[in-house]
Image (cartoon, rainbow, N blue to C red; front, top):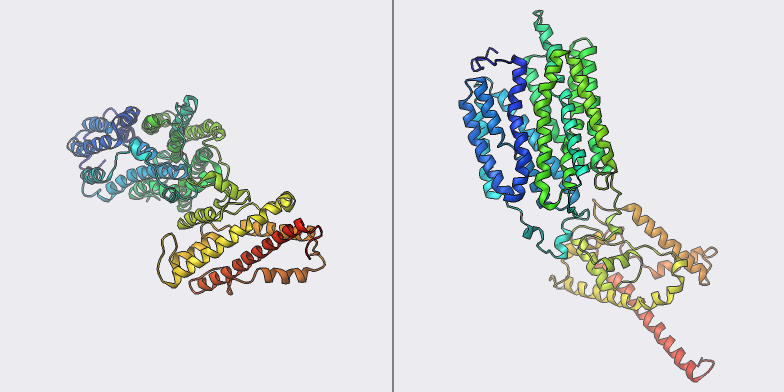
Length: 611
């Protein structure tokens, strides 16, 4: 190179071999360290090792700057300090410690790997921007960033402990986790077959990814759109600066990858997303090879080349974002760091050795053969990972029922199950369940509407339980109206704003969990129940539908005048009307109960009744 800071020589390697060998030194050090660093963090703690690695790495950046004068001294320093760059498995194990929700854990692990890739890209961007200042000056930037990261880690990172994880929380605190919470149940032992399936698939994936990056950029794009033009003294389609920016900025595409993976996890399962990512790597690499090798080198073909690489790269990263969550799923509590260390070791061994070996293959044959070999490895990775799709923890998960139709974490299972089954539950308990859900923006339980034929024999019991419900609802309306009238927030009651939110959330949920189909189905089922009840009890709804409507409207007068939503303007009128309805039902129930008592008593004295 013509740069004055370039190494005097790179013997025994040529330029291309040296460019692969130099990063390989660092990655081999990282890979070896990763085998042990995860296990050490399981024993010694996450924070202490994270800080040790961070401070040594900061010093290492400075040391590497002073070893920049010769190729081999710089390679040796990269290899040595590579042992202290194995902090990714510690970070992944840390997430495994502190996050108990499966869905959020998968998302956070993907984001962490994304940040790792993004950080590598950021280093490249800094190097390109500071190219005129000096080839090695960015090492000081790296040391400064590590210094800041270490200070922040020391100040804010909390060592996860078993005591913290097992601290009891009350029901409302549990609900704040949201309705999708699902605690991770860790195994007692590692499933060795699954472990090595995942690690082996990850290794194949990282080797195959070399066919895409860097081989499709260097040498394929570099030869096709730059070197062959410079060789004949023609202006190249792609400049060296453009090549540098293409190389460093492609990693930025990991950001959309981390945002898309939760949706793909839900649709395909973690292992399915991994296989999809392997397949995308093979497809995108094949397309780039076809464009770069089979089409003439023009501005149009170069545009297609860049488009395919940048459009396809986010999907190829999926496979790398899934290995962490899959390993975490099979890791016992005391082996989280160990399995993530194996993951990082396989990734770095693949990233370190594959470019070097593919470079040798390309020199012995040609670039196309090397890239095709990478494609074969990606296909092999997809085939190796495919059996994991049948694993119960990694395949596509059965969709959960909506929150209205299931027991949420922390709820009394017996009570909520009775509600879901459509059986009678004490109205006070029903209200408590609804209040706790509404405080967290969750809709209340939508009970199963038991068919009339199933419930016909229990109508007497259902009617007997009605009095307590009517009276409770009437008294509740009285308490809330009194609190609103006094403009005071009574204990265990709501402010006006909270009351409105509560009523609407209980009725229909909020914008994120409202389920109109469920509401419509329950309403329709109730309508069928009413129609069958009328028909079975002497009414003729088929001939007196107008009369039935009039009777229904009388029995169920309008509670709000301007739609189903309760507002701060109509909430008091809503409560007054509801209280009036409940009062009429409660009083009617008292009268019919009293008349029934008189009838039974009179029948005891007079055989034919007193009337």
